[in-house]
Length: 261
Image (tube, rainbow, N blue to C red; front, side, top):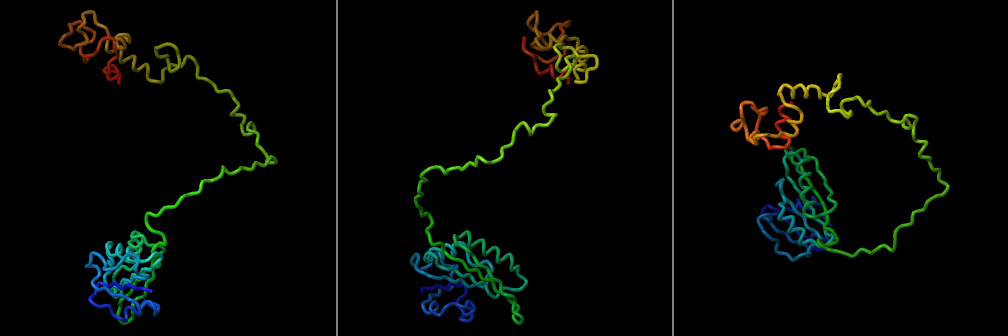
């Protein structure tokens, strides 16, 4: 089995490799690349390694580009092991482990298994390790879907107890709704407010009376001279629209609503 060992250090200590507890057949046919993060590409063919291990004392190892290269040189269903060693106790190990897991998943690997080694009593350092595997299928692979022969059959049991829809109605539901009285100012046929008006129509009519205009003059403004709608500069002294904005003859203007508010 072909194995590749990567490290950011100048050398890879044998003691660190022994901590990984790898099989002897893997270490017999192993390649070692130091200062791996400084290389843009790994000098290996695609899908040529069964296992790739990465060892570093830096908590941000490996970079995204190095993980992409590891993915490239690994065979389908091959394993990757990232081992961060010599980390100080005061570093947030949970955050480092979570970040490493996320980077491995984003790179395309599956089933990451994380482990945290407790700090050593004498050295006061801790180690983090994450193991994952490359998918057995290639990115962008496709396969055809078999069309179903027909729709699934739905079995209906005739013995099922059916509920009468009318039984769900209550007595209140069957009562005829009561319409509001005809004299109400909201539904009455007259345009004038009733004596006990509560909808605000009486107040609007009072404001119209204060303007000295009728409802017809507001809804359908007309002009005998043809200049009333042009504005105060063109109106005579007795014009009923004196003091109001310009408007179009025969059209209800927005100023009507503003004057009523």
